[in-house]
Image 1 (spheres, rainbow, N blue to C red):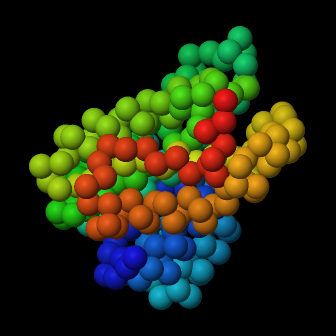
Image 2 (cartoon, rainbow, N blue to C red):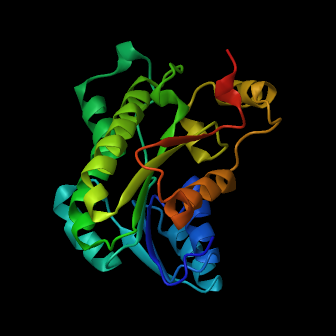
Length: 246
């Protein structure tokens, strides 16, 4: 796969899965990688340096791309885009009885509405053949402990991907998602049962190991490439076979 001369935006692209995606596009010849992030300037600068070493221009966008008031200005800095990867995610990891409406609004807005806002703003300037890829998780259609709000937000995200795939098809903009299995990143630190989860997934995954950020990055690049020209509105599961088991 080659993304020679392409301009790519990766939201939440400075750490974890997002960083792996950013670096993979840079390594595949992308001309420009725009990395959005919220707070960690040090991690963002480090990722930008690694992008530049791979020969791509790095653009750092500090701010919440899910905020409609900020999205237009931030995307203006990114310039016209060939690929958008909606990776940034957050959420409240608590049981149902400990959740309230504030938690609902924060999680759904960050994980689902953000893609709606970004696509609405960016799509008019994206050329034919462009691609949007969203990052989902197995909790979109499976019930996981303490994951209610994030799971609901990811299910919403996948539904949005299907609708956008149809709505943007006349512009030849493809929209798909990657649903990743458990990936050992800093995001797991918010789970009270982190070590138990890691042990369980390692033992249960048929592939014999956890999903790595680079595995997700490879799937994203495939969906963003011309090789996936007729893949539209789909969610590609990358979990080492975990979800095949009863």
